[in-house]
Length: 118
Image (tube, rainbow, N blue to C red; front, top):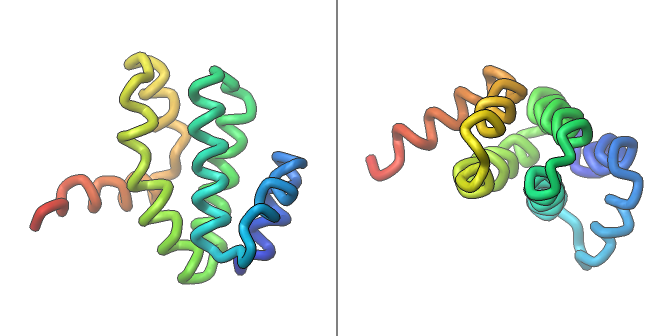
C-alpha cells in the first residue's frame, strides 16, 4: 500500500479526510500520517471511542500493509506522538488505547521508548 491507497483507506473511515489533506500542496506519506495522527489526537480529546478504536485498527492495517515510507511515517509520527497525546488521559483510557494497538505497533513503541538516547 502506498500513501494514495492509505488516503483511500482513511477516507472510508473519516469521509472529510481527503478534503483536509488537500490543504497540503504535495501530500506525502508523512503528511498523510501526520494528519491522521492529529485526527486521532482529537478523537481522544473528544472521547470519541468508537471512531478512535476503528482509527487505531486502520493505523495498524496501514502499518502492516504499507510500504516502507508509510511504515517510517507511522514510526516517526504516530508512535512518537503516543506518549504526548495519551499523557492527559485517565489510566483507564490510556490502557484502553494501548490495548487496541497491535503488538507490532506496541513493539515499535517499546523500541522507541527503550532505545531513546542510546
